[in-house]
Length: 94
Image (cartoon, rainbow, N blue to C red; front, side, top):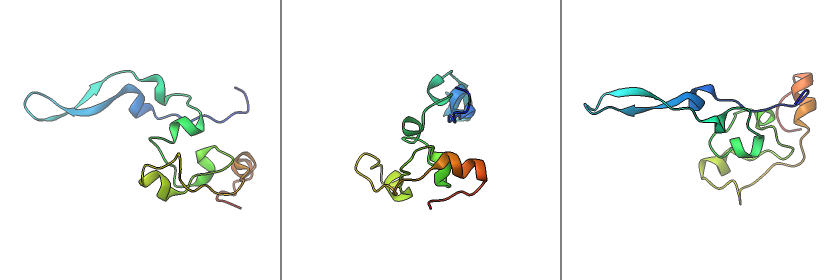
């Protein structure tokens, strides 16, 4: 795990908003480890970083593919070395 990048969304990992019996919005606690230390491609089915570097994939998805719910058949960028980009602080497709 050392030297690797993983996705984490602690808000989604500990619960979600829902309505109580009176129709009021409340936070419902429910542990969901699916959003803690998740690999890039799996996490991207529900989360899409605006900066392609944080997709943590070598071929980032286009935002349109995510919005349309079409990651499987959607457009992807050419090879992109996200690790080097994160280390140098230069983000975005080359």
